[in-house]
Amino acid sequence: MTVTTEVADRFNMSITDDPYWSESSWFSWHIPEKNINGAFYNHFRPNMNCMLAGAFMWDNSGQLPWTSLFFDWQAMRVLPKGKFGHDYNKYDFETPWGMSIKMLKPLKRYHLKYHREGFKLDLVFEAIHEPNEIGAKSEHGLKRAYNFHFEQPGRIKGTVECDGVEYHVDSFCIRDGSHGPRFLETVTPGGYTWSTADEKTGWHVLAVDADKSRDTRIVGGYILRDGKMAPIVKGVRRVVERKGPRPSVVEVMAEDEMGRSLAAVGRDRVTGEWMLFPDRGMWWQQFAWDYDGHTDAVGEDQEYYGLHDFRRWNRADPAAWKTR
Image 1 (cartoon, rainbow, N blue to C red):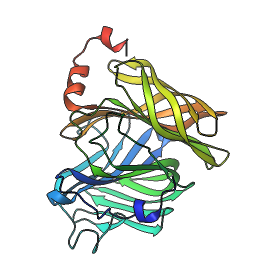
Image 2: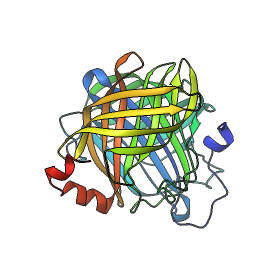
Image 3: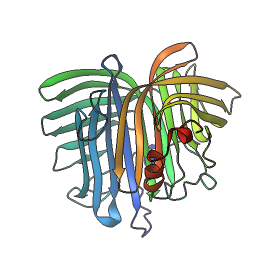
Image 4: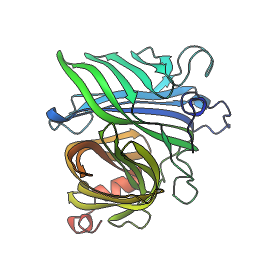
């Protein structure tokens, strides 16, 4: 399905009265040669008159919010001034705490800024292909996760300054966007996994772990090869090895609508352990991926759980971790 700028770049104004109705947007950024990972994320909840948003930067010196290079998650802030969807929009807003997005070209270029607590981010994302919409979710255990969700591969460039040190960013990446009710406490555990190797090569998968096995079933995503993108129709994300409870080696095997197969193996590079929402915990890791002739292509593996599942999994024993 073609994703238009009217759907992806603007707030959906057909809002239900669900208090958990959300509009979210995420941009990834990375400095692989320095083992640095980053995220720029915002999440509007118009029926609550609040938003959740922030920027993160982490390396192997610390994987928790209070040990990472930078972690600023504003969890209960009022919406920007003005009328929702009229005076500001999904990719055209500025917050009182120094976060802003400006769309430079629909579905193509976006300017990101963040300035707070000694952290300065100034990046431009440029898409390398049209977005891919995640398909129907009725059987995915994600009924309370979104109504509409897309991913888009790209390249991101600019600078990030942290504690007086300036870093130059130039890496392939991915972004996403969604709208709809989102309540994740009882969401089925799963994996959100991707890689972008170059302007014509990459992939993304969303997988659910309904039966608590090593093979999480892929329920959405795409393969980008030779500049041609097609939705994935079947496949698995398999955790091959874990370090304690978290994934350290992951395989992705998938097939798209064009009949093309993907076989990718990824290894952990940088680990973050976050609880961005009160009802959800996750490992958010930079991975180096091998596939389609590429070695150590940049990407990530995010393994997420409803909060109580995450607590129980972290408290499980090594015997349990080896079987899943």
